[in-house]
Image (cartoon, rainbow, N blue to C red; front, side):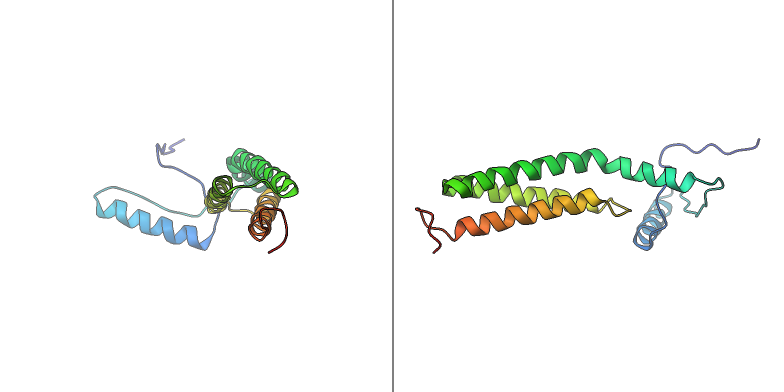
Length: 148
């Protein structure tokens, strides 16, 4: 058939301007170092392939988003329980704040690889916002649970 078989480094990305700029810069660096690199656009030639490709992009981060959602829900339940019983101390509060920062950072990382809007990402963001509110609320109470 006369096809050229491509090896490692072949990938498919959606047509997004930021990605195009990054790929162009990467291609230039590879060429500057003596390598060979190409970027080009392609369109699917068969009806329904676009939906299949979108599914592949969503699947590429689905597991990470599910784990992140579960971790965010766990933190939120922990904070709700602690708020109900006014039993968060300094060290536990610091650990919860660190966990919230870690989860936010992880969400930002995953979102950087999301080419399509994902409702699970929005759910995680809402849960993390709830966690932030609970931490802020807990910090405003004194040892006996009174607002200060």
